[in-house]
Every structure is written in C-alpha cells, then in structure tokens.
Image (tube, rainbow over all chains, first blue to last red; front, side):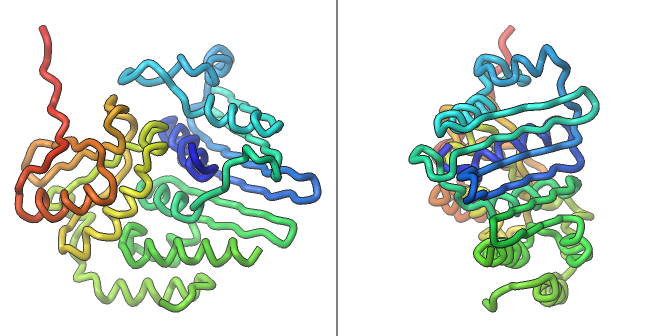
Length: 178
Length: 129
C-alpha cells in the first residue's frame, strides 16, 4: 500500500464485509509525541479469540476466492516498520477495533494520501453504513459524519458526480485548515 | 467551483443538483441502470481501484449513462486488478481486468455506449465436473 488512506479503505472494507452498520475512522497527527495514529472501529460481527489470533497471519483469510489475506498483515508491517505498533481488539457480535500507531517523522511512514476521496467513495458505495471520520491535529479537529451529510442531502445520492466532488472538496478544505 | 466550507454550502449545491435531476428514478429503477461493481479488496486497492471507481462515478453521468457504481470484494482475479464487473440491464455480467482510468474511458465509450466488446474481458469460469 502506497498510502495510509489505502490502508484505511482496506481495513474498513473488512468492517463492511463483517456487516457493520457504523464505522468510526480516526486519524490523529500528534506532533508533540511524534505519532501518527489511525483507528478503525466498527460494530460488525467481530471475531472470536481463535480467529483474532490468526487475523494478522497472511495465510489466513475469511474468503474462499484466494488463500491469502494481506490487509491486516500489511497494515501491521507498515506500522511496525516505522517503530510504531499495531493492535487489534475484537469480540464476537460486538465489533472490531484496529489501531495502527506510526512514528510521524519516520522515513518509512507512508503519506496519508487522498483520504477525502477514500472516505467519500466508501460512503457513496455503502449508503446504509454510517461513517464517522475524525481527523485531529494539534491545531484542531474535523469530523465528517455521513448521518449529518445525508440529512443535508435529503435524498440526493452521494454518488451524484457534483455532490461527490463537492464532498471531497469540502473534506480537503477542512483538513487543510487544521 | 466556489470553495465549499460548510454544510450550508453543500446544501446549496444539493439544491442545485436536485433541481437538475429529472428524478431519473435511479433508485426506483435499478433494473434499468447499468450496474458497475469495482473489486475493492486489498489487491484491488493496492492496484488503484480507488482511482478507477472515482473515474466511473465522475464520468458516467457526463456520458449520459444511468448507472449504479458500487464496491465488491475480491473476485479471485488478483493478477488482473483493478477488476470491474459490469452488468448491463438484461444482460449477463462481464468482468474486465486491468481497468485503469484510461481503460475505464474505453469501456464507457465502446462497451457501454456502443455495445462493442473491448480487450481485457475475463471469461467466466467453466464449471468442471
């Protein structure tokens, strides 16, 4: 994965596959502690302890179309490569929480990438899922909540090209400000 | 386009779009729309399926093609990512491989507009006994 935004999308896809109706994505740039923190929390089906242990094994996957599952292992590898850490917590029927902690100024930390596009694509393609994206830096915090957006849009779908572009633009502006 | 700084700005755009939408019964009539599923598992994302999907969303309407663009998981064609499954109304689904935004444009112009087949179709697996 070239960017952290791709990782976010990849992990969130797991949540969607697990039947989540609410996905909270948190990105935190902590300059004082030199940490870059990403957390994806869902209310999907979760995993039992045995599955959880195997989740970061690249040769374990929940699907049948191929025999490898690289999403979590790649995320873990990237976090640990920078000297950071990776954590996954899950309980059956309660959901899963994946956290990756990167060292902010480490050369091997991938750039965040186009996170605005990532969030809007996921929200547009999974209309029934409630996404909450929180981005915080020492300067401030920005929250993108699809429930509020849907209220404003009032029936106009997010995958309408104009709305789609406007939403991406809006998130970019907000993130630039903080 | 003016900068969008708040939900109020978004509302303006929304109202603008709403008046433009000739209530194309998109959601009421999914069987009349083209269905496009972009494979978005680890393999697809790493190969750039995000750009492909963005391209489809932004360009189908411009070409006057009513379509629903959604995501799907890995279809098992990791070697040919980004892969896209396209179902035209009343037709069998067709899977295309290596769909970069450039290829997406070709698919829109040739396959969706004119019904011509384009290179890069992944054949449906035969059922073996």
